[in-house]
Image (cartoon, rainbow, N blue to C red; front, side):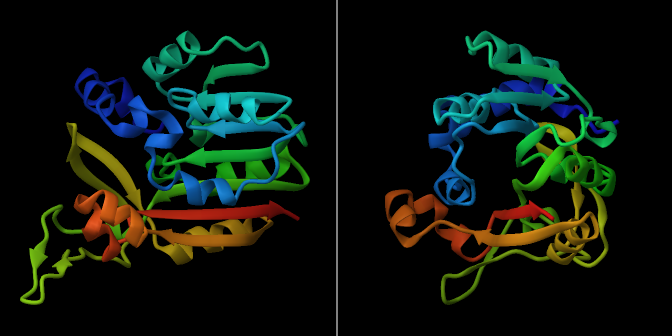
Length: 243
């Protein structure tokens, strides 16, 4: 089973302070770009992998999706999602994404935001999604950029020119990396960009978009603290199609 850190009281309380937890999709800086990778939602059957508070599930319905299934391992997340959702076309279910079963050809869109980097084994999930999507169905997801999952320290150094640099630790050696984020012992799986792309292709998907997301100059001007993210993109966004 994947690590269920979100049901840790200390972690859950810390995560609740993030802008994306309090403001939803609009509080996620990468959302405008991620949204451009999505197909028109009208009439789609959607599965959200790692649905968290249910923000995307509710947005998909507001955009015209016919039905949405939100999956998450965290009971705390699912309880919050259920409390803030009043829509019979949205269903929430507890599921371990590493051992997921879904009906064949039951969905038009699979979506996942910042969840797949917690999974030790990605290939079984991709195979499941390929079967669960209709031909031509879309898979859109985001993960922490591998430059974030491989640093030897969260601290940075500043060059004489004023640029921030982060030392990398064994970038090409994939596997679990343990960090302290809101709570000690948070385990994330480090993979290279090539591994994500190769896994998608091996599962039978066609890659349609790949974005190493960083804030735009306009976003940095509005939030100067994001300036360092122009040197080290925090998110990897991808879109694929079921062949």
